[in-house]
Length: 158
Ligand code: FES
Image (cartoon, rainbow, N blue to C red; front, side, top):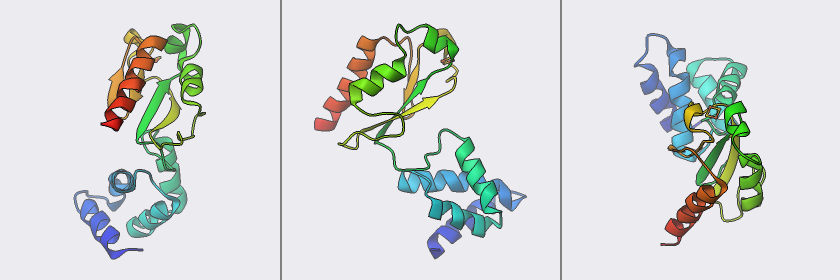
């Protein structure tokens, strides 16, 4: 375990009355640093915060915003809950998956995109909806999805 990681997590833990309250901030730190939360990273967090590994692993797998494996630079989170699904002729997940040539959990060969199926994004009144990283997109159509993904690809070429 790297001393630097230990120092950072211990400093995070000092902010809380209970050391284990630093669990989520520590996992977020790993994700910000590496782009995902690795198994090795979770094991280190468990040791540093003196928590069972199972507790760290179950917390990390509970939150859909935490990635447990490397993802694309742009993570497309597609809501497949009932409202979003009813408002599309064909499920948006299937459309985007076919369009990018990847399935959920895969990364495009250029490393740009990965897809995640998620529960309600809290935008039911503006369904169908998706997130790409921190940006929310609402009232989607297949055409608007093509435009959004196309403009991201274009911005990567500049
Ligand atoms: S059902 Fe899709 S955002 Fe709520």
